[in-house]
Length: 289
Figure 1 (tube, helix red, strand yellow):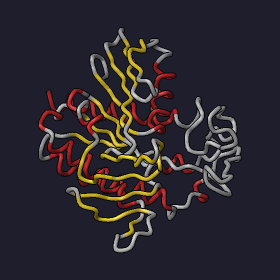
Figure 2: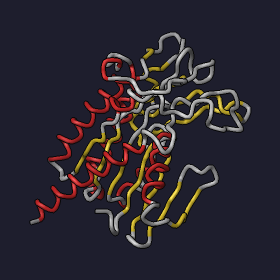
Figure 3: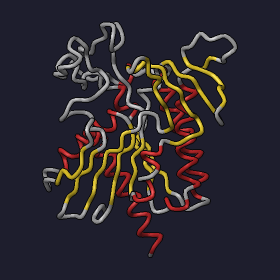
C-alpha cells in the first residue's frame, strides 16, 4: 500500500511520539535510512529503500501561524495567532505527499492573542480591557478549520489522503505538568470510568465536527479525508505514560503524563492507521476498476 509513496505526520511532539512508535514497528521489516534531521530534531525524514517509501515528521505546533513574542531575546510564552494563515512549513510539503496524518492540540493552552486579516479579534487567558476572551476550544477549532479549508482549496493536493488523528488526552493527577502533577496509575481504566464530559473529549468532538465538514466539502472536489479516532481508547490508558521515568535532563522533577511509553498503548495508533489505509486503498482500487 505504501510502496513508492510518501507519508508525513504533521503536528507536535505527540505526533512525533507516534512516528517513533511506527518506526520501531516498521524497522522489524526493514531498517530505514535516516536521511534528514534539522538542528532541533523536529523535522525528520526516513527512507525505506526496499519499498521506496519515505516517512517524514513535519513539526507544526498549531497548523496555523502562531508566533511567540520575544522579550530580551527569550520566549515569553505569549503567542500571536493568525487564525486565517496556514503554517507554511507543512503547507509547502503537502502537495508532494500521498498520505498526511494531521494532529495537534497540546499547545493550545497558553496566553494567546487572536488575529484575523491582521486585526485583533480576541485572546485566551488575557485580562486586557475591551478584548474578547475565548476558551482554548476556539483557536483549536479555527486551526483545524483553516487547515482543512486550505487542503480542500489546494488543486495540487488531490492525490493526498488526509488522515486526522484525534486528540490524545494527558493524565495529570493532583496538578499540572509544571506544578506537581503526576501519573502513577498501573492499570487501565474500565469503560465506566471514562468521563465523556471532560474538556479533552470536547476537543475530540471539535475535531470530528471539522473533519465531517471537510470531508463533505472534499467529496465535491475529489479530496479524501479519513479519521483515526484514538481518543476513547487513550482516555482508558492513564498507566501508559513515562511519568517520572522519562529521563529528561533539562526538566528534572517534572512528570511526563502527555507522551506515551514505547512499546505500549501508542502502538495501537499504528494498528488503526493500517486499518484506515487498507480501507482507503481497497476503495481506491474498486473505483479504478
